[in-house]
Amino acid sequence: MNATLESLPGADEKIAFDKFHVAKYLGDAVDKVRRQEHKALMADGYEDLKGSKYDWLTNPENMTRKQKLRFKALRDSTLKTARAWAIKELAMSLWHYTSKTWASKGWKQWLSWAVRSRLEPIKAVARTIKEHLWGILNAVVLKVSNGPAEGLNSRIKMIKVRSRGFRNKERFANAIYFHLGGLDLYPDPSFDFPDQTSQKNSVSH
Image (cartoon, rainbow, N blue to C red):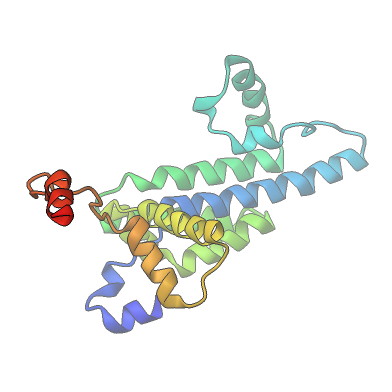
């Protein structure tokens, strides 16, 4: 990021921290709140959160009717985890803006709620988001994602794993270009290959 800011004109308007990473940080924070609260409840003999780990991490749209009914009771409760989940969901709804001014207002209101939540894992993520808000606003307005880059990185890692390492960086780079460089390895159909039969006859003579 620092190299980009130093080398690319207007980089502060182009660097974007996309939705995927914000969602991951907030999802982890919700899970930390759930684990802390579950431990405290179990100590008092309550099992309100038992077996609910994946309910908080799953998109409600992907739930069965039975799962949705169960989760509705959880999210509408007074549990700290329910409050953390609501804060996360509000953040996920802030990506529809097209105006940076309005997006900034929305995120700042969210930050105010998150910081006052008295949920330390959420507050920690809020501090991270506040520090990187400029890049998040870029992502919101530009509607960009680093998903393709993440996918490319995963494929590069797979090349390295399958090859069990390379002797030097040059060979590693060549392997990346070969597998992911979009090379057309098929023969040119317009190329007129020499007739093998005539070649053999000429050799025998």
